[in-house]
Image: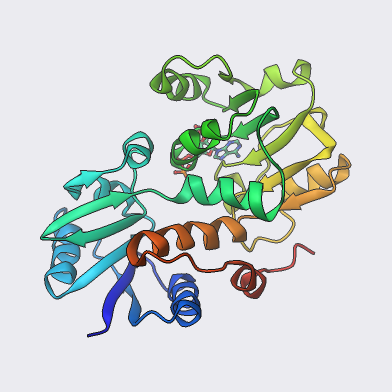
Length: 277
Ligand code: ATR
């Protein structure tokens, strides 16, 4: 029987996951189907009911997108360390009546930066804008890539510091406010993980943080040249990228986890890329 998978979110109309996993399945010759499910926002337990019903009907796994990443976390029977730290889940596997939860967003981002863009983070200075769910998901994979210094900058500095404290002893990781950046020099990689680009806003980051030899990465996908990427380009940064590669790489991680085979990502990224200009 064809194995059943799905992505669940609300709204779900614009999801690229069925296309991505469909291409992966074709390439790796896996007998699987992948649907998009609009999950219920209310009542409280309705989301978990839909997930359990999908699993009970033979579903093997699910991706989870907004606004259900926290609810997926709460209902899981087992969670990976990455999911624990993120406090959020973006992929689930159903085995023997149990819901096993993962978060591949951060590892997908690191893979896109290190493998696709070719920027190895070891020994580099990394600046991350934001301290929300997206950053929580990325922290462990980023630290595992061994940057010499990693700074989390957030408008709400207390939130950034709380995130750093949660990681525990780690000399290379610090949190600060935007006002502190002027004196901190250049970074090899600046990642915009705030939600500012979704509303066309620009975080108050000074152009002095950018290094022309470095890279600027916008987590949002398909928004073309956002104010953040424009600022980076005007500061002379030649390597600028949005989150399309991360989207495809996190999907590849989930696919490998579910199917035990790693799909190639390049052609899928190319197919989904919206040119920045
Ligand atoms: P997500 O889960 O997508 O990360 P979130 O948890 O609501 O969403 O976090 C959004 C992040 O974007 C926060 O770090 C927020 O900063 P504050 O914590 O200081 O509010 C950041 N953010 C949103 N709009 C921003 C803007 N215009 N400039 C700078 N940071 C912004």
